[in-house]
Amino acid sequence: MAARRPLIRSIPGDDLRRDHVADRQDGTGPSPHDAEPTFARGLVELTSARGRLRAALAAVLVQAEAPELALVHRWLDSWHGVGLLAVGLHRIGYDLDLRQYGDGHWRATFYVTGIAHSILGGSAWEPTVWRAVQRAGWDAMQHAERHL
Image 1 (cartoon, rainbow, N blue to C red):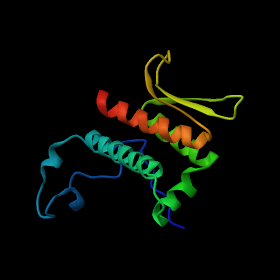
Image 2 (cartoon, one colour):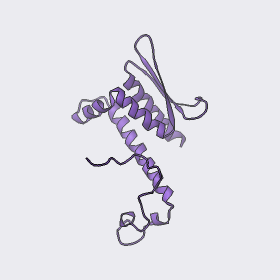
Image 3 (cartoon, rainbow, N blue to C red):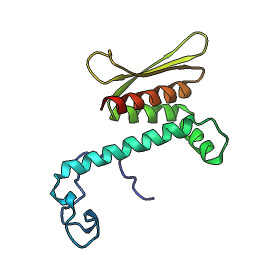
Image 4 (cartoon, rainbow, N blue to C red):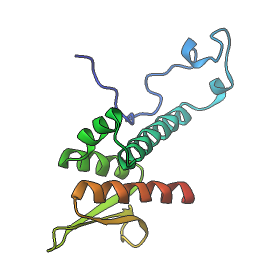
């Protein structure tokens, strides 16, 4: 079984060398990226992870019947999916507050990570916990795009 590549490396650019051919656009000479510090390459990883998170949330919120969407729902419409989304959104700066109400509905709220949860990123009230987290997560992603 192949090792899984982490979404965010602990040391940005740790497996990239400046003289590596893959870092060059045409494979023959230095690219403009060769002049950038390796830390900038780590930010590309974060942006890529953010894009994958956004794509997963968009796919799971589409109201259509398709085999590809059913696969995403099997993946994210569960407690495991709630955990994946909570961790993914925490990595981009949001904390999850999850509450169940007496009528069986759930409130998921993502706050900007910090000492006091005073800045709301996204919130949703739904009959299932995963749907609440998915909708609130989408709102938080929209909030991140507007404020970053």
